[in-house]
Length: 479
Image (cartoon, rainbow, N blue to C red; front, side, top):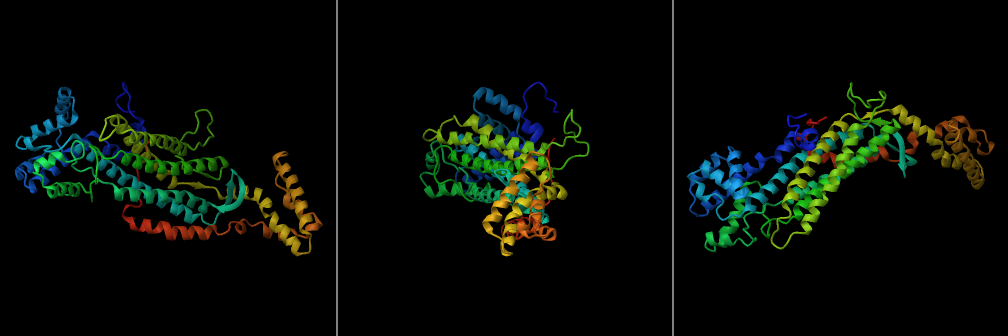
């Protein structure tokens, strides 16, 4: 528990998100980025011939990180304007440059450009963690690609799959998210220096109508801040659809994580697989034997929050008036940050779970063998037809025996005795040895193992190989 017990603190900070993601959305990151943008603006203006000196730019650079937050807060009480409060504070630290800070810009020059930079830097963290989760699942899929297990449709036992093949389903959804993330990062653009209504009128005045210099100004700022381009057109702000698109991506990652965690929770209830567990971890304060899927439950819970949170910027994007309105501000600063903090926490937990999934092969086989006679009945029937049996009569008989065996299991709590019923019926002309040969789970998994090999080789390994320098990192998972 933190020291502040008398006022609300976000659980994202105290319980869930990592320190590195929290820093990306911190005041220090925000306001030092404002100063970097002011430096980039001043440097570009200097190089393009405005009355800004190299000494002024150098002084601004020297004071990027020593923000006097108390002075800024006191000034904001007077001006009721956060940007102008920080312009004043920066000017106090850089007296020789005070007169050229923010030259030609509007508040959104620092506010919106910083928001884009923060989203980019946060996406880099998400990308790194997502790749490591994918790496864990790829190893797991490869290790268990040939272990037969029950598959389910409608949550009812269906034809067999393998443990590794099921893991590729989780991995494939993360792959889709990764591809979307790569696209989103590659197309993210700065707002640039567009002015109060996006017309760059103030810069037309500063540069005396020299359009080429105004365009060059934006290019130079973008390059200094690590971007390829600025948005081609805007009002005072960048389109709020950018926030909506980014949170749509985060929602997609949350959806994939929720699918994984829900499947794991069900498998843990089946006692086939379970999440890792600390030696002294308590499952229940009353029931000492319990092994609750606490981590996966937390993934599900956080994912639900992120998915719903992604609606906030969607509504905001749809209700922006003309060149700008301010009803985005309060919503935006909460929803965007919390979506990233939520996904960060989700990926931290997924890293932990996927790095230590416990598999119980004997329990998996036991559950398979309880259902396999039903799945093998068609093969048994076909073999009997080959020996001269009547297909329709055999089908009717198997249906009757299946109902009887099903009732034995569900009503009487007995084992599945379908094979014994078939073996005892001379109509099927089958021996116990022949039935045992049919009842091999490996015969019913289709191309599962090959599909795992192909998927990993063609879709996943190229990504892992291209990012091998970031594989194997461990990430902070809070309690």
